[in-house]
Length: 254
Image (cartoon, rainbow, N blue to C red; front, side):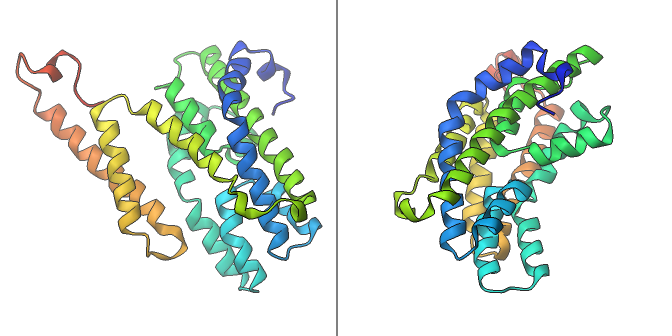
């Protein structure tokens, strides 16, 4: 998709890559430590390289590594990866209006390339799909520009981690840089009271449900936050604020 002239020629492609570039260091650090973790867990270099290229999902990779090493059944490994990445179902539903007119192979490619940071940056930039075909192409180009940075940074540094695994101690904790990048984007998106509330609800629920297996606490946090904030938003719409209320002047939750 990066090689498509119709995508690369759009100014939005360069804009997406430019906006994502400051986060490349955090993404790369996360990828580096994932590559190191795969090799140090006992996987061969070939297995680690194959997993990096085919899976492209750091959280799923880190969750699956100990199961692979322990010889867990394939269905357990697949179920774990599925549960850890359930949040991408939410991402896909949100991105569907932007991409639904594309051919199936391009939608599948977007599914492979979508990452937490690229999704967050895109939704911060575009609150709704464009109304014209050219506008939708520009939005896809912006999303793809973000992909280019995230995919390249992740792949290059993961492969370096695989190659230099014996020289880089996991105790450095470089992977936390990727988490900090995501937190930074989250804070920049907390522009309304409802968004702040949804983040707090999701975080509190995920922590409270930490004991759930297969990292289902993540999905639980997302689900509770979406449902509760949707209900609150509907209540706000049904009961408009009185005149003079700050919310009546555009300061209500969005």
